[in-house]
Amino acid sequence: MSKDPGLLHSKGIFSCTLLLLVLTAYVAKAAESEWSTPRTEHGQPDLQGIWYFGTSTPFERPADLGEKRAYTEAEALQVEHAMREANWSLEAPLDPDRGAPEAGTPILFSSRL
Image (cartoon, rainbow, N blue to C red; front, side, top):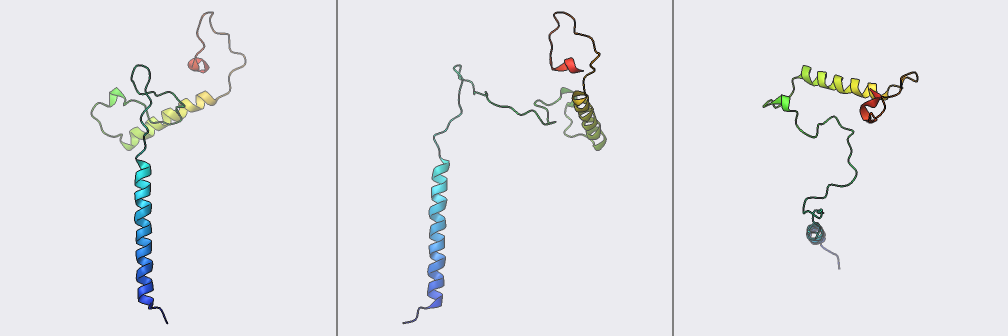
């Protein structure tokens, strides 16, 4: 008794479709988790953790941009150049003959400059 190839093909497509539907339903159910944003004791979102600041994107929009939506190409190059210069100055070796800071002066990140 030989099997009809068209029937086998149809059953295969049906099986694959059924499997895909079951997997989709499983993934959708797994996505509905009970997770919620952690809160502080004051009810605010808890933003503690590791923050990465290795980006040139500012955390807040510079006020001097006003309603301007984008930099011109020349302005973007100027901003990029200023950031590159700031990074180079931070990576430069310190002068071993520089004087000590004044007594009582807090030693901050900017003390390298």
